[in-house]
Image (cartoon, rainbow, N blue to C red):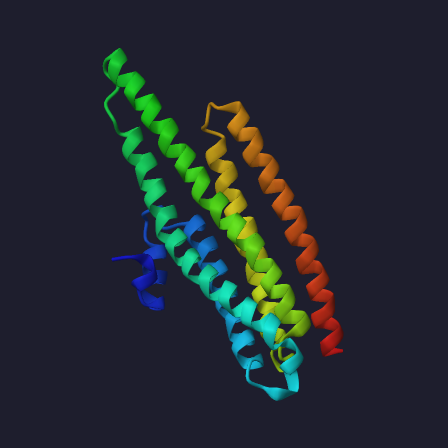
Length: 209
């Protein structure tokens, strides 16, 4: 059963089990999906309302992107859990002979790279979502501004959760160039995302004052 097909109660129950997967990486992707869904909701509540007709074209684009990202995040939820399980499977390979040790080492490296790549892809998706959330806050139905603001908070949580999961896997990777490039991308995305969310927080606060 795919994680995205579980009920909310069943997902929480699965998450709370002693098994480490699904874990933080899947939850980060889920937070991204929730943020994208809220963004899509704001778009739908703006479209068709003649009071906000000037924003319709922009909201159509936001809706298309947000709906697509929501589905992408749901796929990443399962991919993250699967990637972790592949690392565990690789670690359990035999290492009695030199040939087995070499094969195991290669398998572990390959699986760990994938385990770093999946949350990195989540982080990239959050970066794309941030642009849609900005539009939802700035041009969406003002009655939904707290929904758009909540999407921004979820995006930040998703980004930082994904970043944690990238970094913990990079520790076990021998390819220094790959590690350095991933760390640079993580840092760049977090800096930009934090700036966007802080700006949106100010806009939401101003609308509520």
